[in-house]
Image (cartoon, rainbow, N blue to C red):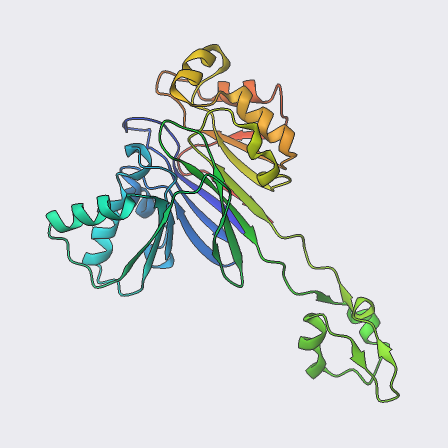
Length: 305
């Protein structure tokens, strides 16, 4: 399974007994990322068995409390657990000063190095890349500087076409790695066997886009075009469109419009205002615009094979 998203929290504003602010745990192509860290995140991580030691990269969308106030506590706990690996933290300019000041004042001691990657660009930019995954920012529009994040698998090696390979007895198992890497095979006769004949196309790289918090911003569509999974905030139903505009949030209808315009495979809505007691209404309303929609719920897992 290449992509697995666990919702640790999906409600807006203040935490309540059964409503936790934004935080998500993403597993993609053997990489593990924490996205946003609202109050209570580390409790939710334990409840839903998210491995603390697996996380080396944390992505914070913006510095509003319901997306950030759990970070200092989490980093402090890592110190208590004697973590030694570097922790990379991506977020708006100012996140380093705010975080380190709190840790200093509370005399929290950590042996591990905290590497802050502060963001300030209003253009989409590549901020992380290794041999498995790349991460780009999705510039959003909220009351403070905010980014969403686009996580994309790197293309996997081509698959061996064993049926065709069997037609060339001269090809040895020792050649397989080179073939998977895209190289042609030169036989002893000098004949060149094209790699396209010996391999099959790899699976399409999977992708996940996280967009919270933001008002309706259709210019993000080219950035998230054709993603497999889109999480887009839907703080209000359409009956509160005026309030959404005032607070720079989105409605379920607006989230669905973004999903439809971007031709995403599946939409997840979340970040519900506490005024709504029945969150199923968000799915019902969004589905009038975009059919393949689901609602975020605490502890819910979304997987893409």
